Amino acid sequence: MTAKSRMAGHKSLWGNNRMKKIHGLTLLMLIVCITGACSFEPDMDREKFKRVSGAAQAVKASLDAGASYEQFGRSLEALSGQIAALKGKAATRKEEKLFKAYTTLAEVYQDGHTLWKFKLEFAPFGIVPEGRIYVSQDVEPIVFKYSFPVETQLYKPTGKYWKSISEDSIRIIWSNADSQLKIIEEIANN
Image 1 (cartoon, helix red, strand yellow):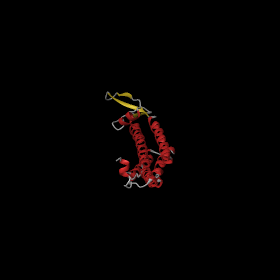
Image 2 (cartoon, helix red, strand yellow; image 1 turned 45 degrees about the vertical axis):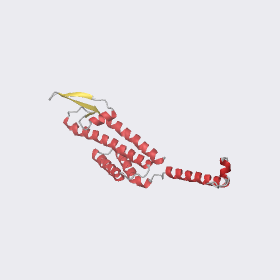
Image 3 (cartoon, helix red, strand yellow; image 1 turned 90 degrees about the horizontal axis):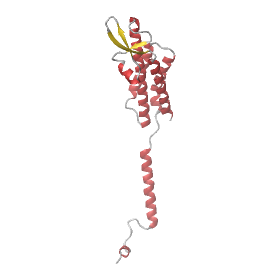
Image 4 (cartoon, helix red, strand yellow; image 1 turned 180 degrees about the vertical axis):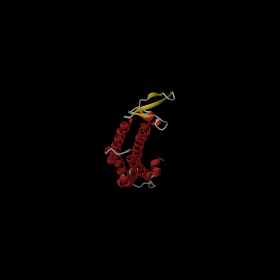
């Protein structure tokens, strides 16, 4: 007795060929639907980023308008506040990527703000040559991060050496901020 003859009296688990095709098609459609549902990600909630976008544009506008150190600081503080308000609220990968891009932008602006601070603080004393920024402990990580060239000067009254960077370093940072704004725009629009 062959296997085929033994099975002749039993009904197939799947039924006849037509039923097999229907079950196979149903199973295939179920797999396609589940796969599609798992890979679907809703689009970014643009409303969620409206305030942080406005704050970022305000920081850029303050620089473009020639704002003072204090005015720029207030704009930067507002941007940082908007970023803090968004922390943990990204619902999609795109929103998370955009949040990180805004965080990077704020860090770049903060680096420029720090250099600006040290440029202003040491200028009245005549210790730092014109066009230079004193490299303090607060400035060293920024110098390293952007690979700014450093000059060493001797302060004759004390015989101590200290380092400085070009005041143009601030412009380089503002240029990096402009590039970061373009990255943000690209993420938001794609």
